[in-house]
Image 1: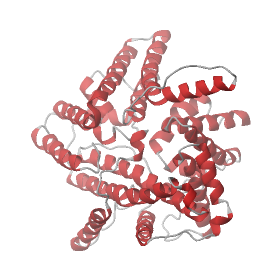
Image 2: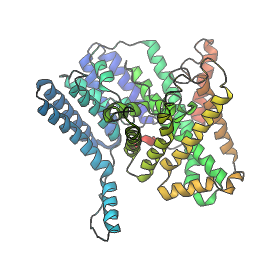
Image 3: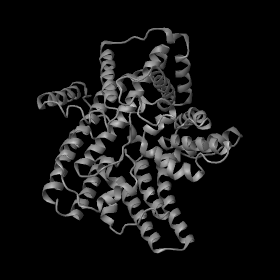
Image 4: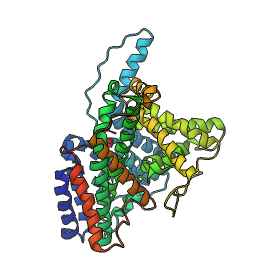
Length: 481
């Protein structure tokens, strides 16, 4: 079920009414409703893969119980690896089986050996990378004794399958989300209104910015022989706003929806395109994944401690694994490695935390230095996005070679509709800049205005959504990850 669908527009109010008006006095019943609603939400896409969520839930719940009863280190380690093997094993089979098989065949062929093996027609379950990491956070934290294991199976099942963030995050930590299922939730009007406002902005990002940018990004990336270098660069910019609007839009809708039910999810995006260096960008982009890898992979490897070689090694590991998490394609690995190269000088020069505060905090405009830093970071990010979007490495290299050719200085052909999309992007960026000190761009917009002006502004956003939304339902990009 898509957030930007009629199905969800009907589904959400029904669940909301049942949750707050029929069973609001019974926490267990509310949690059970969340489980049922979440399974319906996910099963709407393909009910067969509900068994994978149920399997992960049962395995990690049992492992948690086992860890609570065991003090012997050998048994605890065995239980931990049972969880890791079960979860990563499923993820590896569905997402990476054909990738490893194809590369194994290619490797043997290079050495003159022939292997006969057929790829499998595997359908990637939506959101498997997200809920797999979410359940693993529970097992690992229980193993490290940072979290008490739960015996409340319904609450745990609700935590694993919580429908607002089930298929594309944020990837919640058990230490943050799970305890919220153990306490009574009270309806708060202001909290619900705030959630609706964030849902509205998330829908705008998705259906107005992302989907319209996708039209031109796809047109240019899929017809690379037909355009000049300047058009290629414009296509990369369109994709940059497509993926940001699409993914952060999903996160906004997820966080806002969770708030309607009395839950607080972690922030997943913090205006990343206003970053002044790549280190700051990665503190602001897909925060739930970046911090997951930091806490469960980077720090255990030694983090930024140790010698120069250890720092370089750990940096490349974390970025390459992050790239591979996104998909079974060498383009994602190159994308991760390229970001590691961007990040490495900052780390070695101890400048990776030079930009912690919000850019131009309390000011209308950035300084010239800040503006140029933001522009340079955006350009570097766009170059990396080309590998992320390209069909293969050859496609990415050819695309980049055209950008850096003489044809870059040829003016691209811009249609009237493209001008409208560019104007929408300008409006979007300006709104994000004005609201960059908030949790999301329009969090405080209009709160002190007269009600007529406030509702006129919201009506304008709704008008833009209705005016520029695609006629067909468009899935979110990160569903494929």
